[in-house]
Image 1 (cartoon, rainbow, N blue to C red):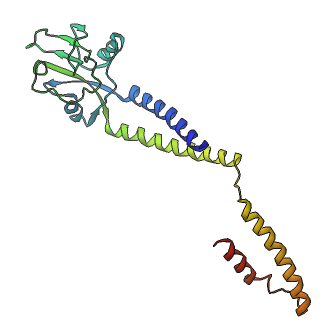
Image 2 (image 1 turned 60 degrees about the vertical axis):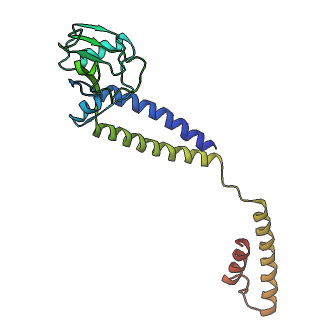
Image 3 (image 1 turned 30 degrees about the vertical axis):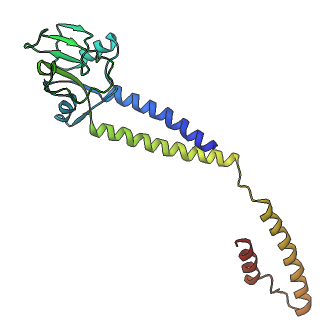
Length: 211
């Protein structure tokens, strides 16, 4: 139970740390084509759309807008389309205006194509290279395995192996029986080696203990 708790604690801390580091360092904001969802946009650059990277505040959106290559917003507004952030094209009702709020939706990578306002908007997508995602997961598992082994070793040091009472009693009784039998055999045969002191006795003892 102690080891299980340690494993869960290690996994939680490491997963949070590695996930945050990967998202902050590897996410690239890309302006897509008209009427292309973010899954499609990211796939064209051998990447995947990262759910959960969406801006939740105006300050976060400002950071996204400044890092997206080729994006020029004449103005910014929250908006309400579930697939925001996006920029309205010249054919739309608000050319050059960027809308960042997704109407409370946390799953925006796919869908909405062929519908308004997708047909007059270019989405702004959080993309991450697949290789980097795999490396992040691999790094987490490697670190987790090392931490688990370390925790197991420490727990093992605090909790030594416990031998059941009945096994200890049986072993103690059989040790006395072996000593008595060895002495009797020695007296009867006059030899220095007892028939109970060799492999036969070991087979009898371990055979009974492991039934």
